[in-house]
Image (cartoon, rainbow, N blue to C red; front, side, top):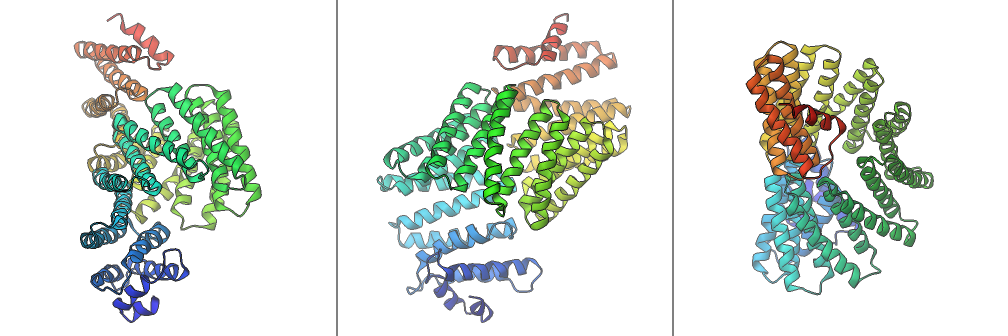
Length: 559
């Protein structure tokens, strides 16, 4: 392929690429050559290799070319194997959009071809994934829905195809994940349940097929995540336990499978997270320890496996989170340090890995949080700055990544928190303002994102506190109300969320307290009443309310 590219022989390159299946060595070498050309283009090469690759599709009228193979090779060799971390997202989008246009043309000539419909479903799903990385939830939703529609058509026309049924299950699951991000929990529940129904059918039809069992475990786990978010702990526990049972069965069936053993650690961690949220620290510890035992054994058996090594760091991290919540700072420090050492080594060995870099940034941030708890602001600052440097580097490498942009905003937040605690109000203000600029950009780009809205609310509240300290009550009130508006919207959108219900109480209380200190009694009474109503909402909906809120409600009864 390399020589054909240098000779600019597009017709022969297209014929060659279509001559092999996607899992053959010749295809692998060709895909590698194509992706290396695009990487060189990103490094300011004068030749437009992306345009060259797209132009290969011009030969779609040539009857001697195997377009079925080319579709397979573009999707499963070029995209899945190579067009991941090394190619910027916008470039991937341009190429896959061109591939979709090309496939639609081929499908129009063979409208009865199930293969082209499936290729279109897969490519639209991939495009949706890319839009999701950009934080473009609207376009992601559109592409996922197209993918789902194609899968539904395939299943209706091929009722006995287990492959098409599985594709439909995955499409429903993917839409469920997106609806969770959008805050449409009931739509998410509907899609997760649809995915689960298909997975259960597949497992029943082919009980010895391990991939169907694994899909079933994942579906139960996702439902557990959603029920946990909705505050339905009993249902979450039931789904997590069912997922764990399947993971244990698969692990017993294929004890040498790293994937199934890793799935088992994830199942234990999910149950640990649930028990931690329920305040049952002993059960949480038991599950996290079970996860760690497996992770340590996997690492012992496969010491050279980066996958197993990373898995071990996650297990240490989970235990660190538990001990941090239990305020056992020394044990938390021990586990966070163990995780950090692993992540530093992984990043040192593969400095180009964005995943390892992000893991390391998160570890530094958690260490910073712990050093604040230990009253060591100097070490906290060191860790927060180390985290920030990585977050900034990742953002600069992929400025269109919503995830990296959000991470950078959080890093500014942490530095702002620390400077505020140190009494350096101006530096804190600078960091919060930088964070706010990013958060507003993200929220404007994806106004349906609950995560971005929550971050925006937090920053505005912190800025309100700073302006109070700076003696600027008008700006403080403006920020407090901006924060409150977001919290009201969040509770309205997700009425069953305990977190958003409690956050709204804090929003009303903050403004109530502000007016009390300003001596504005009528405004104080207005927000005191709103605060009472928000507290009563928590009680009426049987949500968890901590002791301080119980005391607050009692004190507000006087007004």
